[in-house]
Image (cartoon, rainbow, N blue to C red):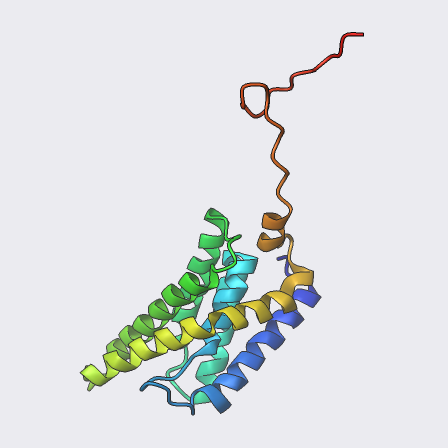
Length: 198
């Protein structure tokens, strides 16, 4: 994705929507002892379809918005989401993310990295921090909820940013070349000209 005004507006509105939904709705819903976090899913989806640099920019922007909205330590969430966005984008650049179920492992790993990263940063910044089994249970529940929500969130993000992408990985999968015809021995690529005798 190139950083055109259209791309910036689409990505900014997606991140703003994800942050508002996270603060107003998803943080209030307690399912299995944890809360879903769609902000990390939005950042991971943008990074998966756009690349490492747009993913890092989206992660920093979303983290800064989230820190400002929640009144948390400014920059803690930004740091973690920047790293998550960058590495998910690098995964897209190194591997071919053309499989339809790629949002599931990406969401699982991105959510796990985000939850562990935020916990580590908060633990380093807070002098009286304690670790309990309930915190680990909440982390696991958040990771599982994010994995369940991954497919619809990634599909929505892809639909919104699709017009500004340089190339769409899923379209590349659908437009693969048809297999070549086999030669007389079954070897592909042998162009054998058959002539008919009169």
